[in-house]
Length: 279
Image (cartoon, rainbow, N blue to C red; front, side, top):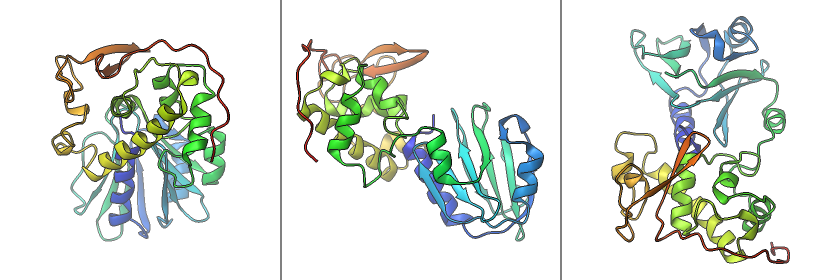
């Protein structure tokens, strides 16, 4: 599933290839993933100019001027692709935006678990979706992150994936972040000490930034990751890149979590009283 690193690279691809272009023709090929309707979306986009983009968590938002904002969510395996030739057309493109010079931008989504929406305001959309701060927002400080995570009386993996706590982290990158932070996926978030919470924040930032630098989502991405990363071994029969032990799995509502039992032991910890983290 495209998570923050992949969507950040979609944003950069859009900025590099399509920013500032006027839309000549709009083709909606699957109305089921479009809101409010295919007809209204096509009417609003036709003739509009693609303005500044922003990413918040797993969402890409593109300013359209008077029509509002185009919101893209990529579901399980969606992507955004720019084509130079008119005849180039990928399978499973659900929305196609054609430009005057023959180039076009395609929202591709094989499994239809995605979303294309027209909204009036980006900030209003983020608030309505109850999204937490973006995981790479420079305004998100370690103490604020620690307070948000520690306030949830749930396992830390579920908290990391909770988009209302922090936006952008899903099943895959939460595994890597917890591995780097040496935390068991089922460790209680509200029982983590201050050092663990600060380490979790630092590792979340470093893992996401590394994934972006190494080309998250590309065919070569796993090969480009540092040798100490779990993701290349995140599979059945995988071995821990740190200790060489067997990678174990846990089930999370139909999704599978991967971790190293040796490097990420689940140590029982009694409830404790902790003062407020200093900013």
